Image 1 (cartoon, rainbow, N blue to C red):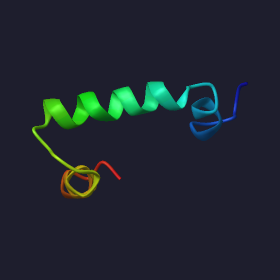
Image 2: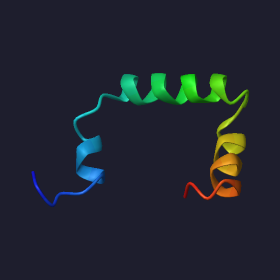
Image 3: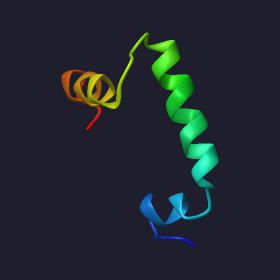
Image 4: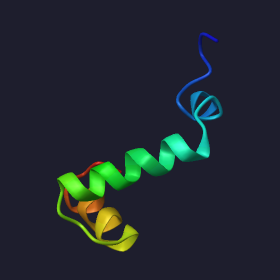
Length: 47
């Protein structure tokens, strides 16, 4: 797996796992939508 990078690693996570992570991040940041989450990421140079 060396050199595969980040994206292929996502293939090993289930949709439910990703959904749970997203929900917990929204709660911790007191955000209410995907749009708010994207805006937060852009404003904080995370993407």
